[in-house]
Amino acid sequence: MLVTSFPAEAFGTNCYVVAAGPGEQCLVVDPGIGVLDQLDEVLAQHRLSPAAVLLTHGHLDHTFSVTPVCGARGITAYVHPADLEMLADPAKGLSMDLNALFGGRLPYSEPEDVATLADGMVLSLAGLEITVDHTPGHTGGSVMFRLPGANSSWDAEELCLSGDVLFAGSIGRTDLPGGSTPTMMASLRDKVLPLADDTVVLPGHGPATTIGRERASNPYLRELIAAPGRFL
Image (cartoon, rainbow, N blue to C red):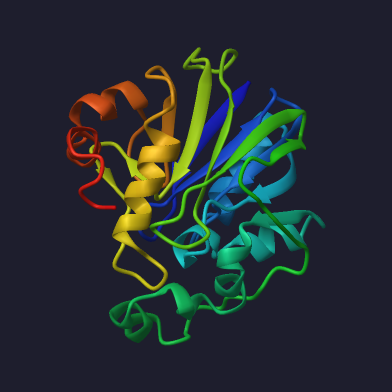
């Protein structure tokens, strides 16, 4: 299995490329702002052909390049329906400050071919089996993608592409449109904490981590474990 990533030019959003191996079809996860050149380099280096784009949520820093990636290859973008409106109008997911900063100046367009995700769905794409976990809180349509990791460079039983739900040492913010702290805490309790300690977490920003490491040191998870009903 091949899993590689690189940070986007803006916001340091991790764009992931996942494949069964070199020379195969692949999945592109969260193609953010200014990733096209780096993505083309990764695809050429490993002789990969994108089969689909997976979006962990609808925020612009994770979706900005979805249309050129999909449109150039005639492939489908997958997103949870609760975040569909952000693919049509990214401003709906931005704070007032970010809306003022961008002011409609970014040349964004909505992808033509979009399929929706559901909690518990298992996607069979590019020779991979990906389980979808709906984990709202950062946005209403935030999801995590889990897939077997036994043959990856981490040699873990499972990999979890966590988007902006869980980071190394932190969690996603809940103060943007569609965000909710109680909903985020419920997602962490119901979908994150039950995962095995050796699950490798590949987040939307920052370095990889493991569920065990976060269970032991992440202040949000520690507080949730100590007082599971406090935020709910």
